Length: 303
Image (cartoon, one colour):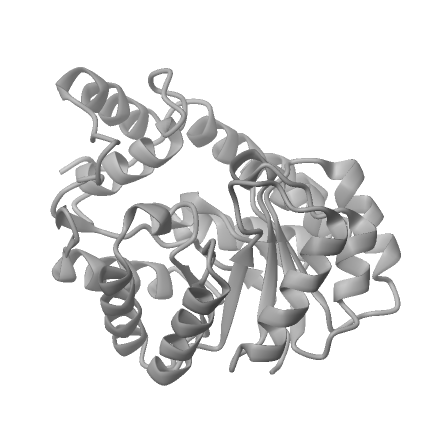
């Protein structure tokens, strides 16, 4: 598979209720992101609330989105699970639906050692029918994929890249150095606040949640950084930080980022509702007003 470079939005999962997909909202969101120039889509990641959805709902969503995309851009599917068997089943469903690859964070609960991670990912890559991307998400799974662990796993022919959501640029620099002889191994950064810097350092792109709302902005940042247009990067960085410091910071919840993205997509008229499965809840009127004000402040039209 040709290496994917560019902006890969971690797509939200539009919902009307518990395990009820907002199919119209999903279609509108897919069309908005593709029209905005994104280079691929990533389903069922952190932004996609994968761990809050039933397996049946996840299967339905993969089938729906792959059908909507219809091969226009590659689709990557999150298969993070505590059960290797369930991860493989989801990978098989992704292949059946036409996805290009799968993405897996470390299995969570008891934190595995680095050797256990190597053993786990090797087994998963051996059994996955699609190319596998590693996902470093230490804040949620309690374990850090060390740079040397990633370098070791990069030797596996079916492990093709890494999404890093650690927000640790020293770590990212270590990765680019250790993998300098692996030009086909993809490196993506999760936090959009760091995408410009990471691409300037050699990253292949960003998996940026803000691209659900404003895909053109993040594509422009990638293009500017790829072209080493520093002045443009600085200009776009201000816009990205305006989003980050307002829409993602309402309230004191661990899920404030997700609530903010979904609420904004609802206020922009992209999705029908910003429902979140329990134990999380969508914003109430006071918080929605703050998101609306933030959107208006950056020049977006609120429906």
